[in-house]
Image (tube, rainbow, N blue to C red; front, side):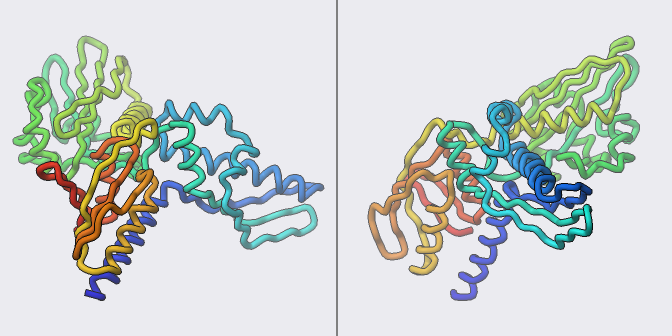
Length: 343
């Protein structure tokens, strides 16, 4: 049992680190020449603050919500959230300055600001989307085919890792599971079949139809039973780089909109926590108290291997479930009874 608990703690730390990566910043190289090293250093560090802080916000906010905050961002505003500034390998030789700068931010302070100002946010990265592309013109149709010009570009692209989607194999089985009739008939079952094959929850579907000299390109994000139009473009000449940049950005933004934590509403639920021993129970309860989607947690009753807590949380229950699942905690509701257990 002790070994299991140690392994669980290790998994939790790994998961928590993954969640924190949304708020992590990278090292920046600072190198310049100036007759006033001190003032130039302050100026350059402020530039890094703005850049790194805006990157965090772009990670956790939709484009609309990002623009709400972007209007007020300046060095004084950003300083409210700075945890520390780490400077490594600093060298000053005559008028030359060199250092490696890393600015760390207080995650809780950022989330507190968002909650106070009722700005929705996400607390984990979007998963990769399976991208399915149907290309047709007045003569032929290339769906999940190696003759598809969009797939040709993506397979040959050296920047595929920059996109938040994965490519299918384009084999016979893919074309058996999915064809253009799936899209035209809104057959979600077929979408689910190919999603299951690639173990992806979301499908990014691009339908390109050329009529005369114009390409109509519609892009959708598919969840289990929902379809979201994310872009529609009409062009004569396709710039694949620009096109996929737009599709990638808009699909991520739509995913954020679907999965963001709604800070304007709170819900509450009574949940049993089923744990094997007191140490694990304390660990899980402390974890729940530290997760910011949970506004308040109160112990209601105590039983052997089972405590009941009142949980007040922001947003919808599905978002809470997904958040806890990242920590290997499963929240289930059966017959109006909520349970949380380690998985």
